Length: 356
Image 1: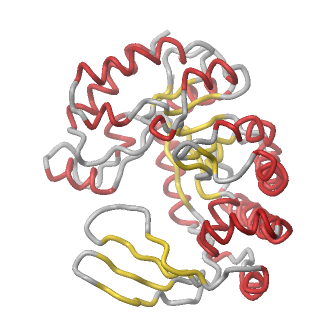
Image 2 (image 1 turned 120 degrees about the horizontal axis):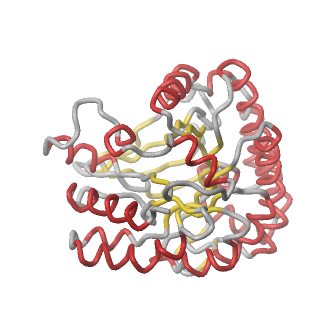
């Protein structure tokens, strides 16, 4: 059974030979394992570990495509810059990390109206060649191939920041709804342009980090009113072309899961344990409706202790593989502090437990 065949069946809750396999890594991890001789020059994680799927991020959603990034300040460890969204961000130069939010030029509806006209479905926003090559490589390897990218929540906050966005949800919901609508329509129009020229992927992967430790960024009611209609809009388009949808969210999003399911997702990823998510609970509540990818505490891998890793896998895999709707993945991304041998053991034992 190829990875593509396996993932299609898992997303449809049909019998397979084993659970699925996929993973995300920090960029530093590739550099470290390559320098240690485990990865050949140019060898992908997908090829090296035999993952069942691969993805490609094809769209640039920055508001001003012609804006040249401006350096505002720089130290030995960090660089602060102004981008084409009018956002001032600080990034660490020596390791992968989420950028620090410094300032946003868009803070309200009036500011938004100034950049909204820039958000048009320009073909310059699309990496046609990269998508074409990634799609071809996945087909050759027999992997399930997804177009990946952000959906509306992850499109909005790079423009106005989380604080302005969340205050807007409370005080000016029509503004937030307008931003969500604008990005949803842009995303779908870009997909139409790409697919007409290069063909359809096997599925769609949307990144939407809608929670933090112990809580979502918004109430279920706010999600239903401002975000879900546009999740449904983008997902309906995918479903109209027989493309299943995987949605990623870090943080605690359990209260939002019923709404996300109603919006039409087929699989929830990444199910972050340290934020309060519970894979076993979600599988019991919603396993008849959606698939799951992740939910294995990456901190057990940090330990590089095989007994700890095996204990985590044994506590979950035998249960969540029931229903043919689970894909093995950590609950975040693998950092360079995880030994190569530890990750190989994670895969070996996880798939051993996940055989049918």
